[in-house]
Length: 114
Length: 290
Image (cartoon, rainbow over all chains, first blue to last red; front, top):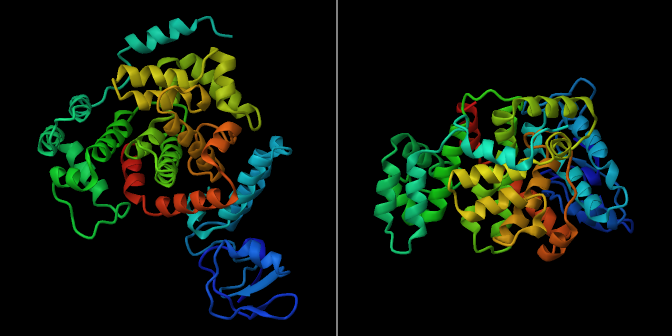
């Protein structure tokens, strides 16, 4: 089990602890599957962090099950800032950047990140 | 810096024997599929003239990318199920990638084709989503859009090494800007000359020519628009490498014409990832030809 920020939610993650909104109403229960699209809805309901199933990621757990270094993903995410630096006032490109940020965290993309 | 004019470059591309040629079968397929009276068995017979090509096409048709429940054992069956244009697109895909096999270029050819494959998959996703008439050509259009970069490497070695030197030295510089700086023309124009030389359909020459200036396309504009966006999505997702690490600016009129927004883009990104994860047979094709 590990705690993640709602913006890091990707398709297929499994809820490990009950998720409630800011009024204490249940939103998702343990065992429910998450979708990337839940990320913005959870944020809207005031949820910032959630617990999901899976191994905790420590300093020594830098290689995922596909053998891809987590550092590659982090490097891709920081490079994304450089790639979009010149579009700071371009709402269209910023939207593309935001969506890309989500998908760079998607396990399906990991094998393409070098 | 160039001492050559655009006309000089064009004449070199048109007359050189350095550039690869496509299988003669491709020309015959194009002629046959352009005719409304051509039958499926007739096109199948043409493709089967090239056994290696037929085998490659069947390998792709039977891959998890298409996910047919039963094995498709013949080209004629593939044409019945997928249609002429789709099978032609697959034949062109294998021929184009194989055509550049063994060529010495500065670009990492495997990364280059991976970028083109990412663009092709995304272009097909978009063409289906937007209901394009030319949906069956979207994949090959995406795959072939940057072919001019390889032409520059093969035909203009001096310029090419200057271009790659500048890209390596400067941070976040778009290869197209450097091509303009060094040659006064870019890969889209050079690629257009190759597509013409190869006598490929005009929608493919339009995509190659206008994918960075999509509003100038007079022919097959929707297909050009889709490849313009697909290139940007593939670059954002860092699938392969198109020669540099930048993400070009999206044309705002194309954005409006396609009605892009958060919801649609999210769907396009997601479906592109689905496609990529089923495209192992295409990545195999790239690995075998590099």
